[in-house]
Length: 172
Image (cartoon, rainbow, N blue to C red; front, side, top):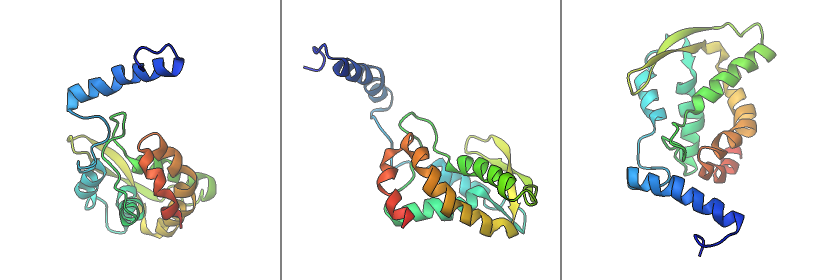
C-alpha cells in the first residue's frame, strides 16, 4: 500500500526504502548498525595507549574510561559506525571542544600540550594532542560537567540514537 499511496509521507518512506535500505541490504546483507563489530574507537585506543609520553594523557585514553567504560557499565556499547556508515569518533568531538574550553576558560593552560603520532587502523597517522597530567582534573570535569550533559545527546542523536536511551543513566 505504501508504494501505491500518493501521500507525501508515503513517497518519502518509499524513497528511503529504495535509496537507502535496499541498496544497503544488497551491498552488506543487512541494514543498520553492526553492533558485533569491534569499534575502531577501541582499536585506536589499543593501538595508541602507549604512544603518549610519561606525564601526559591523550583524549582517547581518558575517554575510553570516562565515556566508553561508563556506557558499557549501563549496558550500551558505542558501535564502530553510524547508520550513515561514518565512523563514530567521540574523541574528536571532545578533543576539539576541550581545546576551545581551555582557550576560553584557562588561557594560561591552553598550551600545556605536545603532539604525538596517533595511528588509525587503516595505517594513517595524524598528530594529536597529549596534555600534561596536571590538566587531567580539568579534563575529567569538562567531560562530566560539560561534554556529556551538553554535547553528547546531539553527538549521538545523528550517529546512534540508541545511545540516547542510556544518557539518563550516564548522567545520574
